[in-house]
Amino acid sequence: MSNTTRENGCDVCIYKSYLFNYLTKQEIAWVNLNKEDIFIKKGEIICQEGEIIKHLVYLKEGLVKLYKTGPGRTQQIISITTPRDFIGLLSIFSNTEYLYSLAALEDSSLCLIELDVIKKIILQNGKFALSLIEKINRISDVVLSNKVELGIKQLRGRIAHILLMFADKIYRSDIYELPVSRKEVGELIDMRTENVVRILSEFRKDQLIGIEGKKIEIKNKSMLKKISELG
Amino acid sequence: MSNTTRENGCDVCIYKSYLFNYLTKQEIAWVNLNKEDIFIKKGEIICQEGEIIKHLVYLKEGLVKLYKTGPGRTQQIISITTPRDFIGLLSIFSNTEYLYSLAALEDSSLCLIELDVIKKIILQNGKFALSLIEKINRISDVVLSNKVELGIKQLRGRIAHILLMFADKIYRSDIYELPVSRKEVGELIDMRTENVVRILSEFRKDQLIGIEGKKIEIKNKSMLKKISELG
DNA sequence: CAAATATTATGATATATATCAATATTGATA
DNA sequence: TATCAATATTGATATATATCATAATATTTG
Image (tube, rainbow over all chains, first blue to last red; front, side):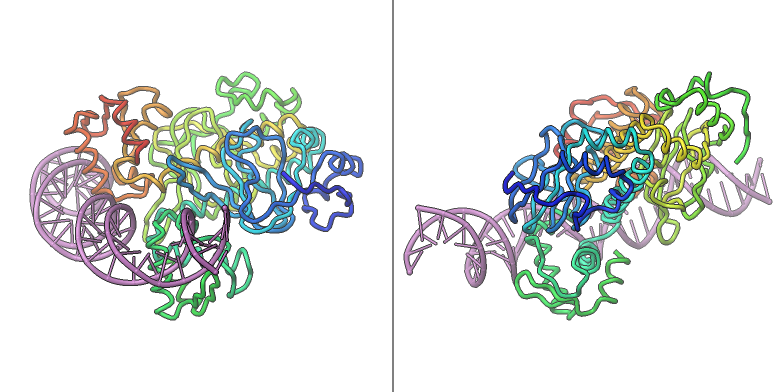
């Protein structure tokens, strides 16, 4: 990991999670002494499954994918984390080693906080603990409900769903640059690259979207929503 | 909810979760005053999505399914909870209303603990809070990894996977009574009833399993494992 | 107990999806 | 810049899965 900086204290950090509002001044100072700010370039791997978990990872800016590698270099993307959120809260308290890998989809700024410190704070600060539990639940709700929905949708519904997810949840804009390849879209919604391409073209021909390389424009959102909901 | 009993105190409860070992005597007494033991018959619904969450639900004995209802009476089973575990820890701290419904697959004994009491204990007892976080993570790990694996397996692999799950995780025996219908198996692993039936018959013809109504006997576990792993 | 209903089962067929093949395009690299 | 590798694209075909139809069996209900 590269480009460590510590010029800014947590107390004045503009990226700070609301969760840290529950910390005392002393606890904030403690976190400040035990965190590391790093910058990761697009495409770089942050950590890999099997490695010992030492940090709670917070995404300040950028975009990060959480994924699982299968046999033969295959990957499945579990979730995409947007700025100002914790990454991988799914399994870091239940395992000593990462179940999933992390890689940057865009240039990203992360804050790595010593997990031991977080655990000690949980032990002594009930409000923080309860808020963290709520946060963990919320994150797994989203990830799980996405995966559950995949099971009932067919390919067109999945593509519509993912296009809307990028527009509404990630970029908050109907025009955006896809941060992933067609192959990765497939890894995110369990389908083959060829079918991703094919259905995107189909949606373009049907005037639902515009495509220019990685640039996507949502043109008929209500129809996409219908396709996503009906499966 | 029926058949409430309170004859036994939590301190002497033989079903007690290890999590309660972290509670003080006072806290245990407090839980004892704010819990309710209920008995639910096979097939009965315990709670439904949309209802206000008031309790932390603990399964003492029996088997319970957590599921989501879709359009037109369709269901998707999210997970099956085995005895001595908490049910629905996935979303009860992040929502005021249940995201999923609960129903008993077998006659079941539950303990309902006031969620407010649990929250207050989290606020004051760090060890309990941290252990609960670990527990929550562990439960969502299992549920999520199951759903993620579904995405890469085809039907035969899913059936093999679910047969092994019942044998190894739920009944710890290679001979068991399926607690669910063929339709529910399909709802659990995202496939049609007809295909569940067909592939079960196929496995029977290939001597992988024996079938007699709901009674399943695993006959060739290593082959089933291969089918499950290869998808 | 009989009637109604749900579950299990099997076969034929339609549809959705993956696979294979071939080419164009982009991006990385020496 | 030329070369190589990865990505994107499209079409043809094979395979997997869903759907439809029908019947046997089991289970619930009046």
